[in-house]
Amino acid sequence: MARSTYYYWINAFGREDKYTEIKSLIKEIFHTHKGRYRYRRITLELRNRGARINHKTVLRLMNELGLKSLVRFKQELEEYIHYYNHQRIKVKLKHTKISSADQGIGPHYYFLYSRNEE
Image 1 (cartoon, one colour):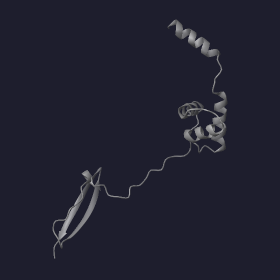
Image 2: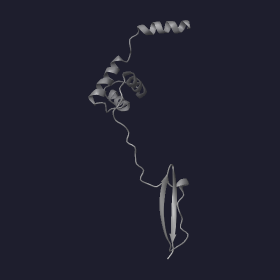
Image 3: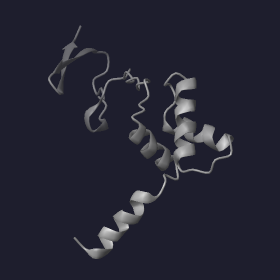
Image 4: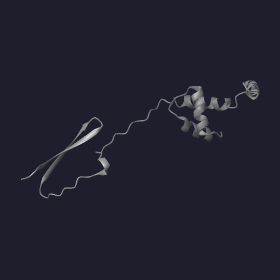
């Protein structure tokens, strides 16, 4: 072990944590909002209370305290059909009925077309 590392740890062991006040504020904000606030909203609340702190520091302190938000992201549903390579179907024959159905098999879609002539 290097001499500088040894003395660094000896000196660091005696120091008090400079984030003790911030940690208590983070716990207070987290529990008053029933675990619904994530690190970004907690950062904004801390800034409203007059503390200057970065959001990455708040995230690190929350991880050290074991605070995790209960809110989960909702997965958005897609309401449109994916056209591969952004290709659309161009109809060259006029006065014909074209019906289509897209079948999803695994990760691929197969487009089935039938042309009905009258």
